[in-house]
Image 1 (cartoon, rainbow, N blue to C red):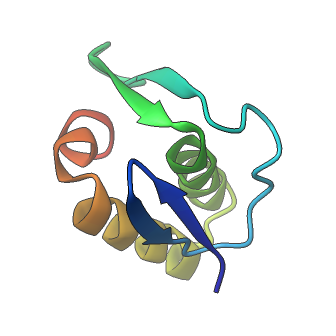
Image 2 (cartoon, one colour; image 1 turned 180 degrees about the vertical axis):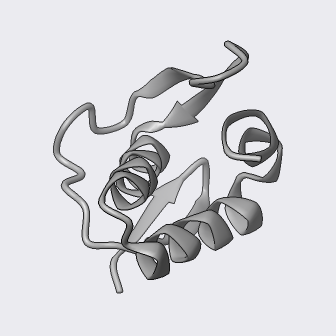
Amino acid sequence: MRTVTWNNKEYPLPFKVNLKWDNGKVINVQNRFGGQSCDLPWFAVAVYDMIMGAELLEQWEDHAQGLDWFRKHFPKEYMVLLD
């Protein structure tokens, strides 16, 4: 499992994701229903994108794995974007 270090904390990633894009950046992500937004580091956006793709493709195991990861590592952002 690949890990990312950000703000002196290690995050094990739930998926194999491409982390070369926007490496080190914080990106604002908007809730697709309510319009609320929050800032996420680039690797969390990659996981968020995988969750959205898994939902679209009905890959429920990957979807659940991503949601669990967000609940653990970014609980406030999970409540804004995915709850």
